Image 1 (cartoon, rainbow, N blue to C red):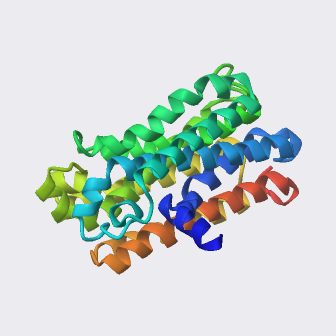
Image 2 (tube, rainbow, N blue to C red):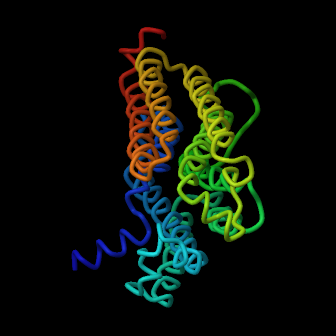
Length: 304
């Protein structure tokens, strides 16, 4: 049983949930600030279920539509579908069940989440097709993951209000800023990840900014995207009224970003994987912790 669970978890890269989930939980915490960052167990569990369903559906869809490219690429030839460890029919079934689970969780949250759930599924799955026709595939991935904080905000608030501008804690500017930060974060580290397939993508007509601009220029773009992401996180925290813990956390995130780009320039498979997974997982966890600290322990926020 554990071997089977491990196989399916590896198929959809369940460990990569650590990228989007902390940002979704951070948005949930800020949206529920009037309740000390906790919207209630039912809402919390439904948000987790929705996140899991949407991500599983998107990842299974990615593996299904990319299976021929994965089989031809030496780096990905060992994945489950090319090796025959998981059948195509099983993968399609999982994709459909995950989509249904996501829609069911959205229905349990509120009408806004339910009505928007089919659009969200289209967005998160569409990314997998973009490498066939656009160099800006990284942007589409960023938008797909940026739905996580937007969705969590909707799950708590039941809607998004842009006017009046104040109070900030009730305004949709906050989740939009956080979503924009996620977009630029994803652009940056997905460019780094695409360095691994630079030669393969060029030979097979697949698109990315690495192919279009070359590794050196693409890394400059990735660095600028991450610096802009850091600035957006700063703006998000200031508008939330966060101070000491949050700013200290951002000062931890900045050198992690710089280290990521230093490692990426080595262009070694080992170091790219470290830069891609471990460092970005650390960034998302640090961000969640400092957001939680600011909301749950405001008495330590000397700036208020």
